[in-house]
Amino acid sequence: MVQKALQDNRWISHITPLLTPQKINEYVSLWEVVGQIQLEDSIYWRWTSDGEYTAKSAYNIQFQGAFSKLKLMPIWKAEAEPKCKFFTWTLLHKKILTANNLPKRHWPHDPICKLCGCEPETPTHLCKDCFFSKQVWSILKQWLGLSVLDSVAQNGSLHKHWRRCRSKIEVSERKVFDGIMIYFC
Image 1: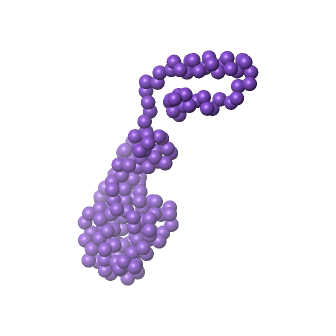
Image 2: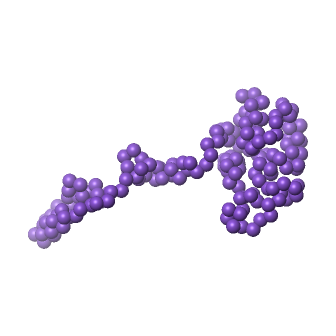
């Protein structure tokens, strides 16, 4: 802002009318001092086309490249509460505080799953691969009549599993199915 004001003496337009000789003298002195200023550095915000900083551009850039580019639009269109959608989004990015993420914060942890006591505790294990999770999914499939999901392979990430299951559901029912996945992941 200062640099723009100094260019072509634009700062002059911000001076109120000078009504006394003292104000005119101060104005002339200021003009002489400002005229001698040489700005060597320029600040350019590389995240906008005009080089100007905006809060919107800062917000947008803080997420650029920070996460994998998973196609997670079904989360935001699903029939579920916003806080559950956000949790699922965090879960699929493997950012929830499971035992595998606690060492990153230097927090004490036991790496083994507390439910089965066999495997390392990860988001995928807790939501899909743990013996107890598999029982919950089996009951859920039976309860909701989702037998079409029995043919879906269980290998891979939680995101891939969701996509495979989703592909077996009719298009008209996918928002409801996505909501079920959100609530039971």
